[in-house]
Amino acid sequence: MDIDERALSEAVAAGFAEQVEWLSTLVGFDSTRGNEAACQDWLASEYAARGWQVDRYTLDQVPIEGMPGYSPVVDADYSRAVQVVATHRVAEPAGRSLILQGHIDVVPTGAPELWEQDPFEARIVDGWMHGRGAADMKCGVSAMVFALDALRRLGYVPASTVHVETVSEEECTGNGALSTLVRGYRADAALIPESMGHRIIRAELGSVWFRLRILGQPGHVLASAAPGAHAILAATDYIAALQQLTAEINVEARHHPYFGAIENPVKFNPGKIRGGDWLGSVPSWCELECRLSVLPGHALPEVRARVAATVEACAARLGTAAPALSWIGFQADGHVFGPGTEAEAVLARVHSAVVGGPLEGVSLTATSDTRFYDLYYGIPALCYGGHARGMHSPTEAVDLASLQQTTEVIARFVAEWCGLTAAG
Image (cartoon, rainbow, N blue to C red):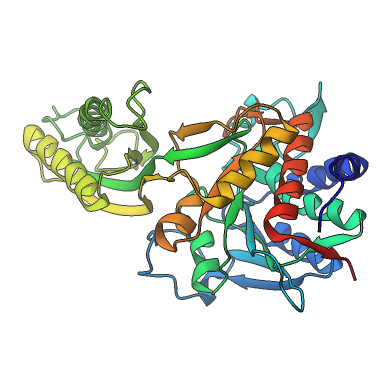
C-alpha cells in the first residue's frame, strides 16, 4: 500500500509538539543503572495504550550468561534491570518484520556544579532540548514511537510484525539488547536510532572494561616508602603503562580500512579510582577501573592478553606482585557493518527524500548495541539518527528540528520495509 509522502510529513509535524512533551517526560526519569524501572514502567503503559502486546521482564529472568556477546556483571542487581518489548502484530503479515530498539539507561550526571539546570529536567533553548539522556538516546526512543503514531494518524499500521524494544545496560554491557534476542525476538532487520548526525554507522569500536586491585606496603607516613609501596601512586604507573599500550595499538590502527583516517581512534580511559583508608598511613590498596577500545579485527582474548601482559610488566618494573585483574563490564567486539543490505538501501532512499543528499557512513569510535543483531544473530542492523551534542556531558542536547526529520525517516522506512495496512 503506497502512502502520500506529503501527508506523512504533515502527520509527523502534527504530532511533534506532543512528541516533544513526551520526550520531556522521558528525560525527567533518572534512569541511571539500577534505577530504570520507573521509566520502563511508564513506557510499558504508553505502549499498552497504543494496543501493542507488552513483555516486561528483568534481566535475571533470562539465561544470558555465556551467550554470544555476553559481558560479565559486577555490582549490579539484575532483578531490578527492567526491559520492555512491545509488539505490533497483524493476523496475516504481508511485509517484512522489524525491530526498533532504543536504550533508556543513561550515564551518571557527574558533578552537579557543572550543570546549568537539574540534569533530569528537560530544558529547550534555541531549538535544542537539554538534559541527561535527551540525546543519548531518549530522543531516538521518541522517534520510534511517534513514527508509528504518525502512520496511525493517517489510518495505517505496519503490515508485518514490529517489535519496539526499550532496553538498559547499553552504556555498560549491552546485556539488555542481548536479552531480547535470547528471549526470542527476531526480525528481518533492526533499526537503532542513536544520534548519528543523519549518518549510518559503518563500523564501530568495541571495548573492554577491567579493574586493577593494587596492593601497597602500608605503614606510617614517616617511613620511607619503596617504589610501588604507595598503592595510589602506583596506580599512576599502571595508567602510564596502559597509555603506552594504547599508543602502540593506535599505530596499528593507521592501517585499518575503517579507522586508519582517524587520529588515535583507540581510547584508554581510567574512569574510576578509589583507595586508602587513613590520611596518616601509606595506602595499602587502590582500585582502578578502566576502559580500552577494541578495533574490528582485534580478537577480545588477544586484547585482554595484551592488557594482562602490560600490567604484569609494570609490576615487574615496580618490584611488586601484579595487581588482581578482573573484567567487569563491556567485553564488546569491534565490528564492521557490511554495505549492500536491502534494509540499508531502503534507509538510503528515505533519508535522501527527507534530509536530502546521499546517506553517509561513519566509523564510530564508541560502542553501540547494533553489533548484537548483525554480528551475533545475523539480523541486518542499521544505526541511524539525527543531530546531538555534548553526549555524556552536562551540555548534552538534541536538535529538535533534526529529531522531527528522524521521526519522518523512520515512519517512511517502516512504510516501505514493513508495508502498510489499514488500522483496525
